[in-house]
Image (tube, rainbow, N blue to C red; front, side, top):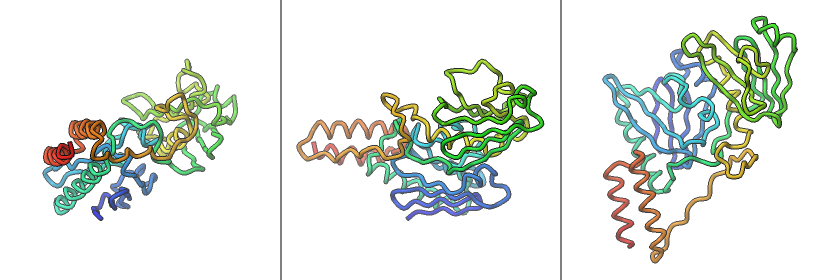
Length: 291
């Protein structure tokens, strides 16, 4: 087992799962602490890196596109401090961080985890019931229905319509946007292909002008997204697919086509940074010997 323990949090890898526990230090971002412990299966990972710095560095775990509903709604919009898949490393722990990276990369290589996108969620998303308050409203989600209550800062049109009840069956998608510059952040539950209303006027949307990430709104958005059809599902499968994709069977000694497919997969892993040059060369030579 590989483990890294620093003020920023604890990462543990047992060969199959990476367990991520955020630190309780006051400098650890509140959103990461609200997310709590995350368990990432090997099949959900696309790669891992250690980025050294002058006074330490950082670990970064990269997930496959579509594996995590939280990243589905918030990926690319979070700063480093709020990213649950980033861990700040101090100078005394750099050696352990490098060992951790080697262990995860070796496991990805041995299990032949494809680095490409997923057609189903491999992580369950935040647990429900869940409530998030920000700006002009408070949204709650119990797994089947969304309830919105307006605050005194809501536009008159929203308040005139009263509290909102939205069935999950009516939701086509979720949009989550943090504050950018002078533009307010918002969480919108999309009931049609597109809304012509501005977020502050949309009764299916809560907005905020303080706290860049809007508290735990990203968590609530992820909880809803986890229960909607996966955007990569073939044929629009509407089940909350959380099961693993079937593993590719190991090729037999005489199955040259399977071996050639494995070689191509190794090339993809190397290109995407999952495998180092040495790891790629060793694995490729082992397959070539079978040919």
